[in-house]
Image (cartoon, rainbow, N blue to C red; front, side, top):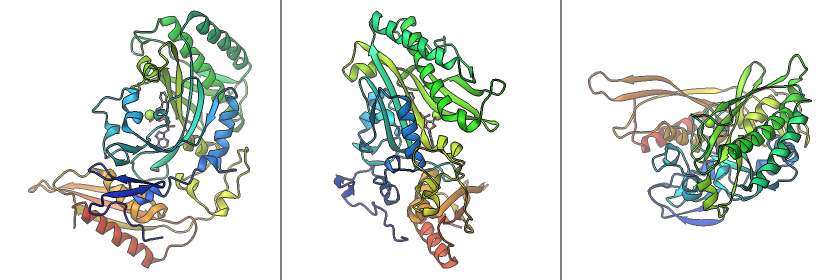
Length: 415
Ligand code: FA5
Ligand code: MG
C-alpha cells in the first residue's frame, strides 16, 4: 500500500491509536508506518522466531510470572521518571522516541513496566533510529526481575539458591569473564549493605550465565576445550546500581546481549515495596534471533511471506534458508538542510512512512558545507527492495517522489 498518509499532516487535533483517540500537541510524532506495527504482536505468533525465543527463555524461569500482553502506550513518567532518568536524558527527546502527545508515548524499553516479585515480561518496544539490516524502529525486549525481602534471612535464601545454580553451572562448558560484583566505579547503593548487594549481583549473574548457556551452547557447539565464552562488563543505567552488560562470543565476535543490575531502591520505593531489594535485566530478542537463526536482515521478522514463516517450527531453532532476493533499486537525493536544526531521525521517518518495509537501507553518502554560506548539504542513498516481489521502476519513482515531498515539508531544499 503506497498510500500511507501520515497520521499528522498539518495539525489535526486528534489521532487514533489502538482504538483510542488522543489529542495531538507539539510532541506528536507517531507515523502511520509505526502505528501499523502496534497490533502485529510477533512475540505471540506461534512458530515465529521471536515467539519461540520468548518461550525458551520463559522455560528457563519457570517460577516467574510470564507477561506478554501489556499495551505499548505508556506515560513518560512510566518510561523515564519512575526509573530516575534525568530531565535532560537524550532518550526523552522527540527525535529519539515516538510520542502520541506529551502525556502518552510508545515504550522505549520493557523497563517501563514494574512488577513487585518475580516476573518476565515480553513486549514490542519503539525507538527512532537509522535504517539498515540491523536497525528497525520496533524491536522486542524481555525484562526479567526478581525482588525479594532485604532482611537477613531472605538474603540468605538467595545465597543458597546461588550455590545450587553455581553447582549446576560448574558442569557446563562455559568460560565466564567476570567483573567484581561491586567496585568503586560500579558501587552498591548507599541504602544497601555491600554484602546484600553482592549476593543480589551474584544471583543475577548466575541466572543469566545459565540462560546464555541454554540459548547459545547447542547452536555454538561447545566442549571442554572450546567452551561458550560469556563476558561481563560494568555498565550504567539510571535505575540500577551496580549495573552490567553481558556479551557472548559467537562466530568470531562479541555480541551485546543485555543490560542488567541491582534495582535502584527509589524505584522499588515508588512501586510500594520499600522493604525489598532485587535485580532486573532487559534483553533484545531480535539480536539473539538473528544470530541463532542466521537471519540476515531485521525486516524479515515482519515478513508475512510463507517462504519466511513456513520455515520455522514452534519451539525449535533451525537455521533460516535464504530464498532468492529480488533486486534492489537505489535512488540518491542531495539537499540543503533547513536552517533550523534537522535531526537525521526525521529523515529516516519520512522514508519509513513513505516506503514502509520496502526500504532496505538509507545511507548518508556525502556531507558538504558550503564554504561561503555555511549551509549543510547531504547526499542520501535510499535502497528500495521488497522481499516478496520485484519492484518496477515506476513504483520506485513514485516512492522517491513522495520521499522528496516529505523532505520538502521538513524544510529542506533539494539540490
Ligand atoms: C535497556 O533498554 C534497559 N532497559 C535494559 C535494562 C533492564 C538495564 C533492566 C537494567 C535493568 P538498552 O538500551 O541497552 O538497555 O537495551 C537492552 C538490549 O536491547 C540491548 O542489549 C540489545 O540487545 C537490545 N537493543 C537495544 N537497542 C536495540 C536496537 N536498536 N535494535 C535491536 N536491539 C536493540
Ligand atoms: Mg546499550
